Length: 128
Image (cartoon, rainbow, N blue to C red; front, side, top):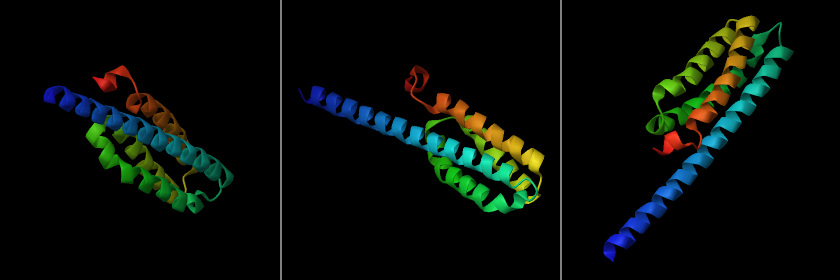
């Protein structure tokens, strides 16, 4: 009887952690996509002086960096590094006032965030 109770407690705990993970990852990716969309419009509005968006880019980069270490415990770092690399390049391009490359990196950021929603989201491969 003790074994059944222990198994039930472990099962409920795992279900709770999995549910928390699904909700947390979904919120993170949704916020990242929203921030990327805002960056895209902000960079487009400031074509002549992209450097003015440096603070916004840094906020997005800091937001992602604050969650990346925790995500590496659950997901392959290689899948997460695409977003990290894109944000680093975006920060550099905005700092150098390079509109063409900056807007390309923001578009890539949006695509990578969407791709990572599938990788980090709820699917059978992540359960196994």
